[in-house]
Length: 91
Image (cartoon, rainbow, N blue to C red):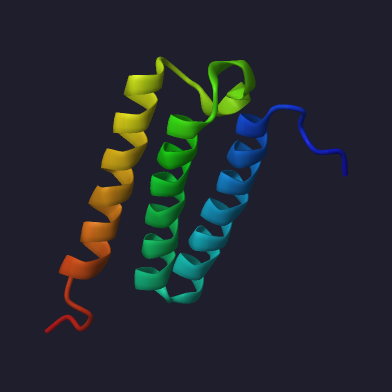
């Protein structure tokens, strides 16, 4: 398998793979771990978008840098909060 040339595209590929693993965890019943993994990947992608230059952003950049960072960080924090707030057993 040939890796993408830009660093951002490599981070994006890793992000997609980890989100897929999180979704598999959701399907097998470990929903809290799955959502937490997805949340961590979004926060990690936001951090990577902050540090990777615009020349090497590749597919990781969708809009402007500020929008990408705020959107991915907000989504990651919201999902992480959801993983901790929802009770583990329903009445």
